[in-house]
Image 1 (spheres, helix red, strand yellow):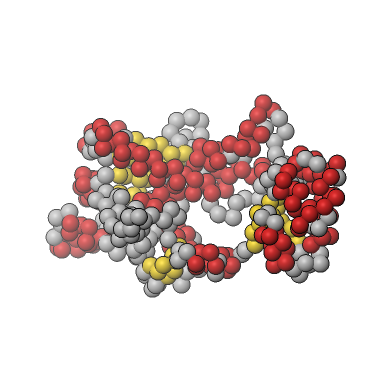
Image 2: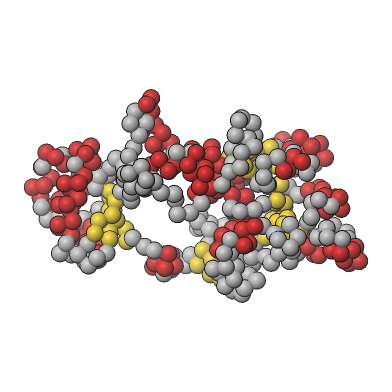
Length: 401
């Protein structure tokens, strides 16, 4: 088998310029950097990407920023200055991709609409990421992750059963969804450019990205059918599939998918084989309808067992299960350690651990370079564009950098 883990990365030679903040665009471009692209992150002088200030949990750095901005170069530009706009245009002359998730309309006001850019840079791929996309009555509406979770129906299917028990996802899933679709769309646009020689325009909407992920509950509620109920950490329509308490005060997550597994679960885990023939639980829809009664039976069986005892029984019966880990448990997860999925990256606060990107390849090692300080690469990038040291000093004094 071929094993060239240090070989050329797929996006080597590709340059991405990004006017980005928060999560959606930075997550997209970080993944492009993982694949070998050069990513030049354009930030406001003195302030930078506002995600830099979200918190100070990573030795003084913001957790969101560390996660989404490794392997990038930081260039500060004040795009209210004409010379800074000229620098950006010179950058785009050499770039392959522009990614932006500025406020609605901001890129167009800066002359960065695809139509204007395509005239000057016909091979440039332009990816616009926004809350609601171009056109439509919501085009200019501000959008943040929680608001899109609400608008896209996600909150209607998460949390507890009461109307006051809705719950957001614990991570920025709307941003993440948009970043994932932006990345895959850019990859397809690069392939298309290889065939046509022309750059193309990509319009990614956070709302559409999240609604795509809502396909199951939407079809479940097709033609005004009753939507799936909010069921906390349990599955809304499959049972038993969720968390169950054990006798040592811990919780085990388990899931059954079919009638064969139900039979085995009764026999080998609950040690109550006759339960499999109980008419209340004789099919998934019946178990789901009678979940409270079944939950009590399961908890009664688990009350004399520790979490590890329950997991041992589930594993022996080949019933899917999981520990209910917190973040500390994930940092120490034995599977991630055994597969050597952790590496180290550099940052302005020193060496930090980082998870290698999913999708391990035998053909190349992902790029895992430093998280940049604000403006760390400004002088180097401007020198590459032909600016002399005196010019760079002048631009700094003028507030352009």
